[in-house]
Amino acid sequence: MPNIFSEKQCVISGVGQSEIGRRLPRNGLQLTVDAVKQALDDAGLSRSDIDGVSSWPGQMQHAAPGFSPVSITDLREAMDLKLSWYNAGIESTQMSAIINACMAVASGQARHVICFRTMTEASSMAKGTRSSVQGTGSQRISGPFQWQLPFGAFSASSWAALVASRYMHEFGATREQLAQIALNARSNAMLNERAVYRDPLTMEDYLASRMISDPLCLFDCDVPIDGSTVIIISHKDCVPDLKSKAIHIEAIGGPLYGRDSWDQQDDLTRFGAEDAGKMLWSRTDFKPKDVDFAELYDGFSFLTLLWLEGLGFCGRGEAAAFVEGGQRIGRDGELPLASHGGQLSAGRTHGLGYFHEAVKQLRGEAGSHQLSGDRKLAVVSNGGGNLSGAALLRSD
Image (cartoon, rainbow, N blue to C red; front, side, top):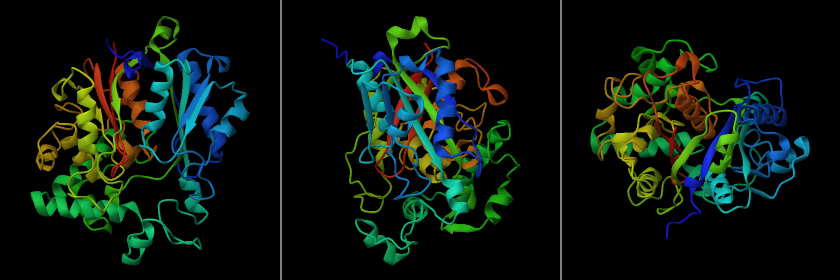
């Protein structure tokens, strides 16, 4: 008997995104409400239809200013929502807001679930607080950070650089190859009027930029922003009543098989992407060759290489050669990546932005940066380290 409590019972019924920018004159809750209203209008739903809310990692304004400033309670009170189910928590994969919402809808706990991710990191940085840098304030450091900070590993840029260095040593990848991830993202962002960075970027610019954590330079790191993204997960039975074209969730998963650590891995060149890829393809009859485009996590450019391999688009150690020259991952290539500019140029929407972009592309609603041709199947990935998740979305 087939398992009816699966993601295949769910669709993305609506998407919304607030203004995305650097130091916007609106707080996190205002941005979230903006995005929710857009998503409701997109789906043709009202506030009274919403009976679930899901987020990741939950409100963290005091522990990490700007990283996650809005709680489920904040949103519930602001919009007077009546919730049958709600969920948030940091001890889970970055994609857990979507995964948990799918399970809630498939099992009947809720029918329409708002998933949101809000960040005000750019404004927080302007005030001198940086959620992405550990140990620079007066707080006492505990947990894994107590073993990393004495060695100068204050942020994920250092942790990712460690893995990138090992990968380059083991497989002979070059910075010129890695640069293609950033150059491709910027090329796409130039077509996207909502992207944060739209100026041309050349190989010379990339190689001349300041080093953040060798081998990762400025353009290998994503852009902190203020903004909110909302995805509404609904039961597929609702499709005839929706305002916009529903996007089906064919498969989704976010396993944790390896150690929950950036630096204490059995093999530093194998991260959660590989495990997420295995789980994803085990839940569908589609194969990597069927995918029309991919929105792969690029919080650091190097992570995209691991996702290309982990999701089976190329073999182990082959990702750098796969992206070399940029043709394969370009808009007319065999696997277009970061069609809106990714987090490297469009802004660090931290996971849900990729879902928003994939839905717009699959509907043919991406406007000035719409990919050519008929695009029916997309992969979305979230996360670095072991907090990794992947989803396969289809348009019909």
